[in-house]
Length: 109
Length: 114
Image (cartoon, rainbow over all chains, first blue to last red; front, top):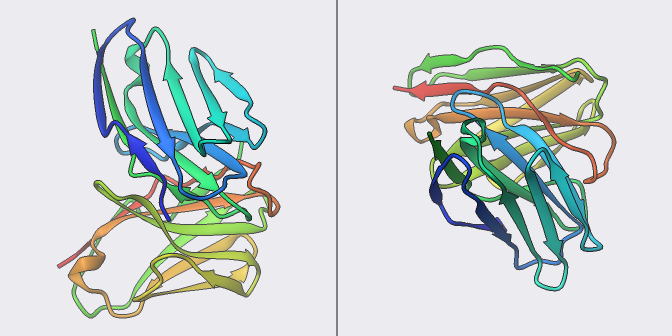
């Protein structure tokens, strides 16, 4: 079953912050985050493992709430280069990922 | 860097044709995946392979088959293409059998079935 991502889309001005949520109805072992720019391959951002850790990549960070089976991606002080579609991928008991529908982020100058 | 190469960026085929999409990875990864990507639906797993000649169905295997004769190459086959198979197709690979490893994606093949 696919995880649910919210919001579907967000528009930001440079320097603003945003949060993208990813929720699953299944117990999760890991959560992946990827970003895809138009016409390009999805690019790996980070993986969070069961245990509630938090990670960061540039000014993009993420958390994993094991009790809620939810992960959140934080875009801090957004830059134009942050524009793209962000996908979460969740894994329960094996290495297959189920991906969310994606969140389109548009950062404007 | 891992390189996953899909043979075509754009492909146009006719209804009823047999269509082959090719994917090659250069890092000796055991696991390879085929996804289709549709607006509002994200990436959905069609098939995956965990070893040469081994395959398993994903979430939406109907109308598709796969072939993995060599470790580096994973082919997706549309046995008799239909218009509802018009989509973006993405190939990915990972090392090992561990969801702690990132998936490496190809650039995708945008397939149109007329």
